[in-house]
Image 1: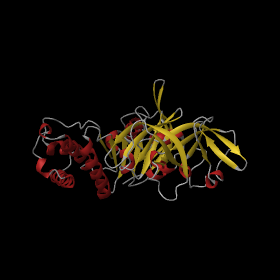
Image 2: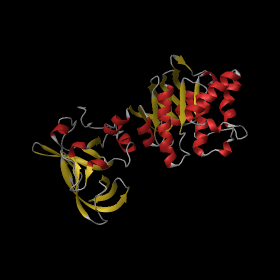
Image 3: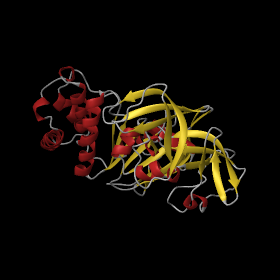
Image 4: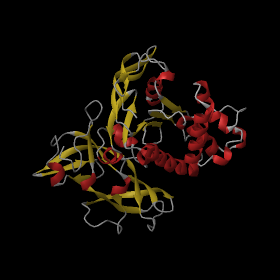
Amino acid sequence: MASVTYENVTKRFGDVVALNNLSLEVQDKEFLVLVGPSGCGKSTALRCLAGLEEVTEGRILIGDRVVNDVPPKDRNIAMVFQSYALYPHMSVYDNMAFGLKLRRTPKEEINRRVQEAAKILGIENLLDRKPKQLSGGQRQRVALGRAIVREPSVFLLDEPLSNLDAKLRVQTRAELIKLHQRLGTTFIYVTHDQMEAMTMADRIAVLKDGVLQQLDTPQNLYDYPGNIFVAGFIGSPSMNFFNATITGEGDQLYVDAGSFRIPITPSIKARLKDGAGKRVILGIRPEDIYFPGFVTPGVAAVDVESVVDVTELMGNEIFLYLVAGNHSYIARVDPHVRAQVGDKIKMVFNADKIHLFDADAEGQPALLKPGTGA
């Protein structure tokens, strides 16, 4: 078992900076997910740790050992790729055993490890089959089994579920969580799917353009995004954003978006860093917007005149695409709501759940974090 530390790691490919001064510590036995859009550097971070790419600057440690110059085979890690990379002419058993054979592991030990991994993954009855005789989910289990038999200090998983259909992805996510709990090993998982990140991770590292944006637990990332990129990336549907200005009338401040304004509640005002005249970006999540008649008790309700543009019935909920003046936004509402395209409705915003971001500052850091006192 081992922790993993990135110390000011930079990776360049010519003039392209794939990782920019990444500092990150993965705790022993932690399930850490690296998430971000394509090209953000998350797979590069994994490949540098695996030794498949050389670090341009900085250090990577596994435990207390600097591994920059350590060959991949000696780093005691196992990697599962997006493509299963199975040998088509070998049986499942031989695919799982191949790496151990190269290391001249005794046959009895190879058999023990393969049988044990197959039992963990529920593929004992597949050991004699060839990869072409397996489904996508079964092939993924074999790829995981090949990593498990290594008994590594760290598991690296690079978008391992991207080739599976939606239902199987959900099932395999749960299996990976249980596998992590059973093995008690450090897992570092790369995905562009924020839903995978939210459901699987102990902590999530959000990357953009090779720069770490925020590192926190899934719930804290969701509730207290550190900047507008994290706020928009985490959550589905993503947070709604409106260009606005803080205005004041006497002791009351408002967030004025032009076609509507939201009074700033006393609890938010006490934590607001700037006063009237400040240009901001107002953020509010779809679930903090209510259809009239379906408002949760205790909500700091603010009516916003809106027109229904599109409705999406999801079964357990409805997504309403709405227009308020020149602003478009999404609300996640109760499935019993009856709304038609073109309906004029006073939607209800929860004023206690707004997020404010600095429209003038580079990187647009949060002006406040609801409920944190920040």
